[in-house]
Length: 114
Image (cartoon, rainbow, N blue to C red; front, side):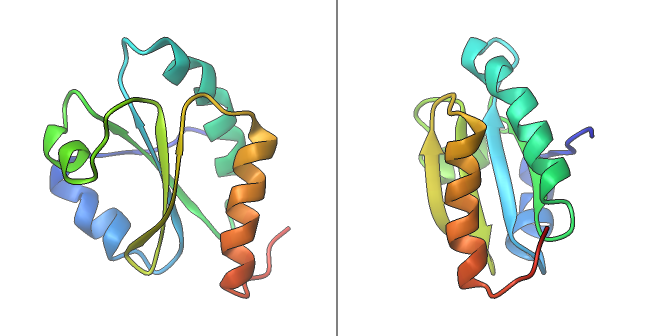
């Protein structure tokens, strides 16, 4: 599954105004750990496709959003629910860690998923 890119110009509409929870992967092409976590992000997008929107934001091309959310190191993954940032995970983490973080927030939403 190919994860769509968002930009400074589309972040508000795609993430903040989203009707469903959103996971945002802040990354850059030169970042080795970002490339390491990319398959994990793709798997999460597939596993949670019925309840979660997953997008990527290239911090080099979209510095406004990156600075607005205080991105200091990448990869940084943020989870947004109802337009609010509810969690942030920094670094190339294993899928199990990201899944358990997501599950914690999705359960709070009382959403049914696979």
